[in-house]
Image (cartoon, helix red, strand yellow):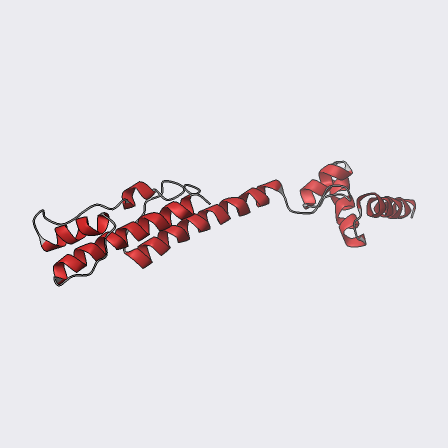
Length: 158
């Protein structure tokens, strides 16, 4: 019976010293007895921390959440540009910002066409009105590219 009383005293000490409930303290005590470990090592084996050991959010968890937020922000910025403007934006890493240089307006039309002239007209900051559908489409294309580029730049600076 003396061993049982010693066990109870040790269990009570674990409960008090390490803020464990009775079952946790018994399990830690069993590990200590069978493995020959001290209380701290036995608690580590059991996956418990003592009263002063925290039990809160770890730094690894915090860093993971920050990286996840950065990735989501940049991922959805790129997705919005792709969905709203039809242009793919490349990023080269989890937390990299979108590469806006690929969105700088570039005239995709053949020189001398109505589309080309409309694009150049829009690039000069002029209104996209007119009588030619191809001219208006070229001008609209410039505005679409410019809007996607400006949106990307505005997100890149946040």
